[in-house]
Length: 246
Image (cartoon, rainbow, N blue to C red):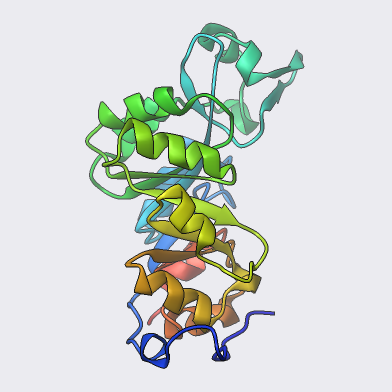
């Protein structure tokens, strides 16, 4: 259950009384995948049409160093054996298709397609591909940030190119909710929505960090998230969030 109570004895009351940062950024989780294959250019394009401020996507890299947008490390396609993206060349991967014969896009092609219309939050899913991802971002003019469940990846990205904003993903609610944020030198705390409360938001804001709720699909929670000051809402229901009036 989403908690909106004020936690006691954790942080100075003046931080809990800071005004919320409104409105929250509307982030499309893997694009508008109710109508298009997730992590496809078409899903991202439709998400923007539905009112998304930003896109969240996942990346891996091929054996020859091409960063591609896909959630799972393994790809499957009709008539082809399942294979790990990391074991395929970009040419081999091009034979694999998403639903309805939609191609698996490269990160560079997505950044080109989106341009300046929205920010892109890039979740790195695979180890040791940080330099490849950073290069794609630096070669693009699209506003990007990088996040990961592996906080070592986040710290590595910061070391390679500190100008790229970074974020740490968390599922559980630690006693010190911002410890990982500080340790990785990250800007964004990507917190699983059921573990968000006012104290967590206040402690992040006290560090001039941002809190992004994922994956927030319960419409009834959105107003609570806004009220306690969450900076971004990442959702699978971008059509509803895009139409939501704050």
